Length: 304
Image 1: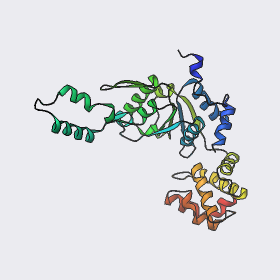
Image 2: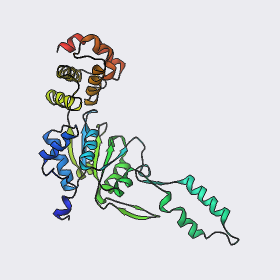
Image 3: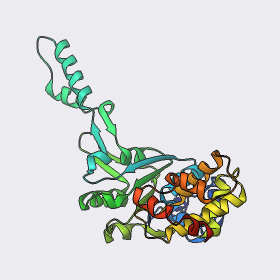
Image 4: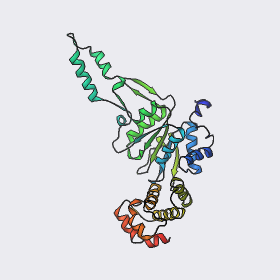
């Protein structure tokens, strides 16, 4: 069981409450609602991983980046994909360098040949170890480990993650056990393309991340891009909200809201009208079918 002093080690100075952490996140440009700020604060306080689920573009990855900034920690990202295995997340050996080293030893060995035991020990020395994201996070203090799109990995990889998150340690047969002096803050994200197993969910603090409401999205846009006129920010956020209500292949997220506003501002626009919206839809919609469908009803869309 952890002592209380150990539990509070990773809480950043000045963030002694969820509200204070929300204020610190706001200073980085990330606006967290009360629920998300509370879950993040508890994760720091209790040394628990966070599992964030939600639609793409709701700011799950951005929260990990903002927390790393607040904590002044190194952000280490593990992008999951179908077929990823433990070696790609944990460590590997630099095989080409090992071969070159072995050839150098053979070339310089004396008449008695090489001591095979010493050679083997030398080949698996620290200098040939390639640390992948999970091992990097365990050896880096402080650090934030972002396990992005964990729902794209398979069951075996989830089991591996569960073991690492339970012990904050890994064992490398040739090196020994490597244990984190201070556990990294772990943020797992999922777009819910499949269900993450209950065992992994139980290990984490869970939060479903919604698209922000209209007022909050305008606030995010104004905070991140203060150069965008208020009227344009309101029009863009309103149009994006109406786009999300349509049956699109890929509804836009907050990142697309920011991209659209940036594109319009770069064109010198202060208001969103159907003509300029039609020519800049590529900033907010990423499928031709979606763009064609929206162009046919742009007047209605912008009129609300």
